[in-house]
Amino acid sequence: MLEATMVIIDNSEYMRNGDYTPSRYQAQLDTVEIIFRRKTNSNPENTVGLMTMAGVSSVVLSNLTTNYGQILSGLHSSKIEGQSNIVDGIQVACLALRNRQNKNQKQRIVVFVGSPIKEGVKELSSLAVKLKKNNIFVYFINFGEQQANTSKLEEFMSIIDSGDNLSHLVTIPQGPYLLYEQVDKTAILRDQDQLESMQDGFGEFGG
Image 1: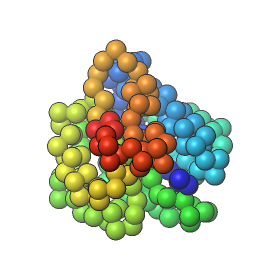
Image 2 (image 1 turned 180 degrees about the horizontal axis):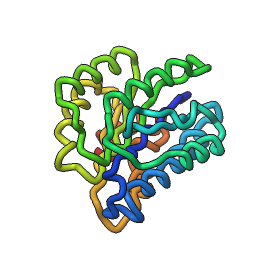
Image 3 (image 1 turned 90 degrees about the vertical axis):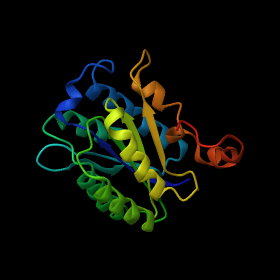
Image 4 (image 1 turned 90 degrees about the horizontal axis):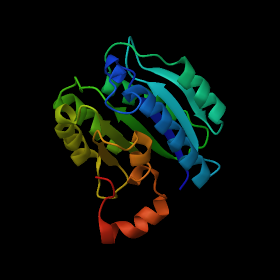
């Protein structure tokens, strides 16, 4: 499946926490590389972009690209600051996807959520409706603040999920395994054709 994927990392102050090895922040950065490799290996025409969602405003660190060097450069320029704004982040990601060069690419957004979501359910629900209308699929990697965020993210998913199994919420608890190892086992990184052929028999992976 041909895809354009914007990855949103959580660069809020909560990312200094060391409950994920070596820290919440570094655990994300390691996972970004896995996401990039999986996406571009599955189809050489797939593109991946990178952005942050905390601080004064959301910042695009790398436009959609097939060059990991651009992603790496973006990661090196990012910094931990302030609070995350998930709605603003996703809206900026949508603009980046709209500007993709190949309009045949399916639109994807991967969001790392590692700090409490400050937006209310009503605001999140309104965003979910817009994403569904525009055929933009969202993958949430929910870690670190699951108790605060899971119910809000589940409500979001109940709106955006059309039963096609193309949007996912993956909750990763603290534990002995590295974050990227856990994400790598989920539906976010499974071959989409394989997923679609298997979903009827096994339900949603990694939920």
